[in-house]
Structure formats: structure tokens, C-alpha cells
Length: 305
Image (cartoon, rainbow, N blue to C red; front, top):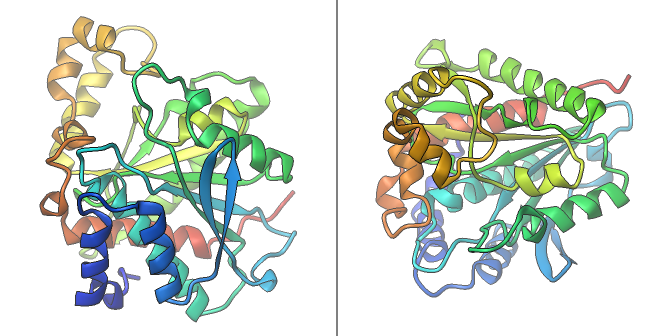
């Protein structure tokens, strides 16, 4: 299923331009858009950070199946339009939420728009908005959810699954749950088609996103993003040439020691948090591919064992 044509309308493009325009309050704009399209929501506040939870009907859930919680942060750093990071993911999830509302069913899916994902200098992951959100989800009994974090989904033609959770520690149980959700994401990618051909995807250490804060809270998380194929392949090859353990965090020191990785660092990621992350860097193919992944995930049912 492609991204709904309704969400490519002049009206929605206008909403997207406002959302990524200068000086706007993204939280207020997001709430206005949800109200405009008749998508019910509730706002929750955890440790001073505000998050938006979409309110689906109770009959959208069954305890027989695993709940899939899909997150996208709505904030951006000052000075950056944040079109790809993370306006793209926000509007993709708006499309999915609208489709779920218009076509009621047993989806077992939560959609949450999170705040304060963007870390500023001197902050650690426990100051990230996703960390108190993760603690809140745990307190609500969401420890066994499959949690997917969508970030920078609007530029490229190749899905990227973060493999950081496979080797970032957290204990045996968390590692096993991370492996399970990763393998489920792999299965979805393998089932997608692009122009009649099998979809291409890569597993890479993605160095950003809500996954850091949620993992620190002890939740199993799978981060998903999109890159141009050439950028993904170049970075994949550079990572494979590293001797020893893969990096969990791409520090400046790590990149200085590994010039091959530094040179192959995706141009798309270099745009993040800069003025270049505007609507002109996006492409429709990325949106169609990303939405295909999202909708396959939304409609997937995983029995609880």
C-alpha cells in the first residue's frame, strides 16, 4: 500500500511546510493537524516533556497478540527545518493513523509522537525525552511491547534497520527481546516489493534517535530509517572493515580513528540538524517505501506465547 494520495494533497503539503517552517511551535502545529483530520489523541507529560498518544478504539487491541508501539519525535533543533529529521516520520505516521481510523480493525498498534528527542551538548540519554517516556511505558505494563522508532524516513530508496540493540548490552533478556524485534523487522523488509522487485535493506549502527533513551530505560527497541542506496552501501562496507567490536556510539574520537568510516558517513546524516534538512532534500520514493514498511508492520499480528 502506498502512502495515501490524500496526504500528498496541496492541503497536506501546506501543513507539512508549516510544520517544517521557521518559528513554528511543532507541538501546537501537530495537535492542530490531528484535530483537522479527525484523529483523536491525548497529551501526556513525563519529566517535563510532552508526548502525543493517538487514541485508537479499544477493539483495535487484543491480549492474544503483541502490541506494536511506533514512535516518531516531533521536535527539531533550532535553525534546522527538520524536514527529514523528523517531519517525514511524523507525517508518515499521520497517514497511517488516519488510515487506521478510516478502516477500523484489530491492529494492536500504538502511535506516539515524542518530544525532546534532540539532545543538546552536555546531555546524556537519560536527559532525552524518550528515557522518562520509556520508564512511563514500563510502569503502564508495556515492557513486552515491540517498540519501533522511526527517524529520517523521507530521503532515499533503501530501508535501514539499526543493529545497535544486538550488541549494546542491557542483559540477556533484553538482548533476546532486541533480537526478536530485529528479526521481525527483517522479515517485514524481505516481504516488501519495489517496482516488482524484492526490497533492498541494510543493517547498520544508526547513531541517533529515541532508541537510545528507550534502551536506557530497559525496553526493547528497533530503530528504522531510510538512506539512498549508494550511501548505505558505502557506509556498510566501511563498517565491515572495522577491526574489533562495532561502535555503539559514533563519537568524534571514533570517527577520527576510523577515517574510512568518517569518509563514508552518509551525506543524508550529515544534513541532520542543519539548514539543509529542508523539504528539497526529500523524495516521494522514500515516503512510499517507508509507508509500505509501516503499513506492513501495523497489519502484522504476532501471537503472545
